[in-house]
Image (cartoon, rainbow, N blue to C red; front, top):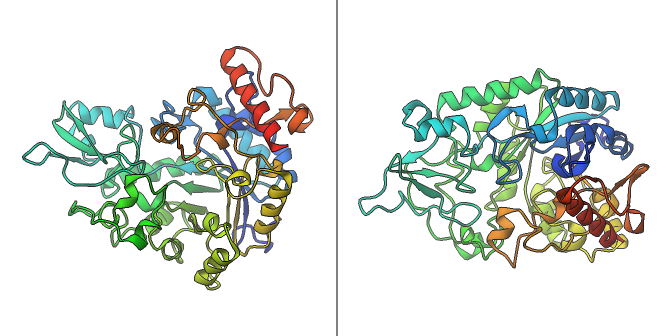
Length: 439
């Protein structure tokens, strides 16, 4: 199925955002059984593997990437038996299974973080707590990737804690042996259940410089390259201390040691600084198999930009190519004009590029980015910058299914993928709208 015959060398990976892929119960929320029921559609696309976004216990403050229990299936998504059945069916169809792992942070509802607030110093050491400066301000000038201050005050500990994303996502201290042991045990828990590999969320944020020095202002050339929209104050700093210190990329060797050489590891880089070099560093022998960046999206905006990316790779085809994901607006609208012709063009562009390919659910249908109101949008990043959202909620609108398979345009039934209740009806209306906009 893959371009080379060996799936690990240049796989085609289909990303599934479980919450909106397929609903088997009529609740209006996607679940693992829904994924299993639709796997034949995915297998028919000729992909090598599926990547499941988080389905773990979470308050959903950040779409499931705020995790309370990394080894338990959230009730809304099913049971551990449903997961086992999904893996078995995927393997029957010749599909490998990758699942997300979020090592950088937990939910603030995680038992470890709650224990830290209650005064357990061993658990507190699993995160990054620091005293305020003498004037009561935060330890340094770091900014989170969503643009808010990276330190939040906790009055019970009378300390600040670090979070590189939302305040409800306290950053773990991956230099702490107890944290590493926790992650190693989690990875092996899922390996024992038959998964073939992992997608590692935000690998470039794992480690910080222990000096906690202030980040310097971004040089203009750096500001243009930092991940995120330039109206986000995160882009105004050169992030040399809050992420990727000298041993940052080498930490991938630690992760590899947890899983062995046969397990597939795909990393996500959220840094725009020297992005291709970073991806190459993280995917050196003995580290990750691949690490993806935003360069492919930027390159697709013009032939010269794409040529520049190919030139910088210089034959090292370890950079996965992708145009859409759960965190980005659908590329058929962002890069194209939303028409079926536009969708076919970008599919044609993606196919011959050398190396791995990531396809996001619904991309094969040519879905465009739906227009959502503030009330329909639940994503915290989108809401933070409303009415100019980054567009993360749009690609998470449910996939339009019928009994015969995925639907488009007028083929979408009036109640979409789910019945039973106003919440399900609202999501069904979004499904219908997305399909109609796909043409």
